Amino acid sequence: MSDIVIHGFAASTYARTARLAAEEKGLAYSLVDPEMGTDGYLKLHPFGKMPAMTHGDVHLFKTFAIARYFDEAFDGPALQPAAPAARARMTQWVSVYVDYLYATIVRGLIVPRLVYPMRGVPVDEDALKENLPAVDSQLAIVDGALAGAPYLAGAEPSLADLFVTPMIAYLPAMPEGEAVLAKCRNIQAWQERMSGRGSFTETQPQLAA
Ligand SMILES: N[C@@H](CCC(=O)N[C@@H](CS)C(=O)NCC(=O)O)C(=O)O
Image (tube, rainbow, N blue to C red):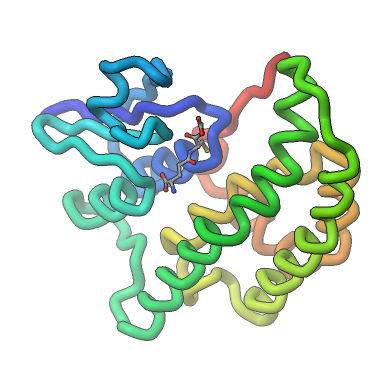
């Protein structure tokens, strides 16, 4: 069988989602740092983002496509519910992550608070502060969805959970993140379940300055 290669930085939330899916399926893969912006990498990901994935002659970009490929092309526990309504709910939460949560919480809070200081990039504190009510309200919605529900799309973890959990994992590392998480008891309990999984431990990024 050909080798699976995930092109992405360990600290990337999207690359971690792809890795979580591979780990949950019990797949062997290598993680390779992409050479962002080079012609070579643009051949793998024409939009210049991460992750991309190669498996023999299968070349994919976009995390949802990669994660679905892992789920559907290989044996192992199903990462997508079979029932149409639950599967649609999974897709709904993946879209919520891609369209809303990533911009507000990853780009608007985690990147400026954690990544910019490591790179010596000045933080626009006003913009960060202005974004906090949206962080609160979006996470309150996720918290509400997890009230009385073990996972976002049913009784078992699905791709929806694998999209959201890497972002939540960064929040305790910053005061604004800690403060919002303290109000989200259902997210806390869910994150505890997610972080107890082998896939989570195996993909833990090391943040170094
Ligand atoms: N919606 C895309 C998003 C990919 C994305 O934004 N990845 C981020 C890393 S988490 C990235 O490549 N950032 C580097 C950049 O924008 O140059 C997906 O699902 O794969």
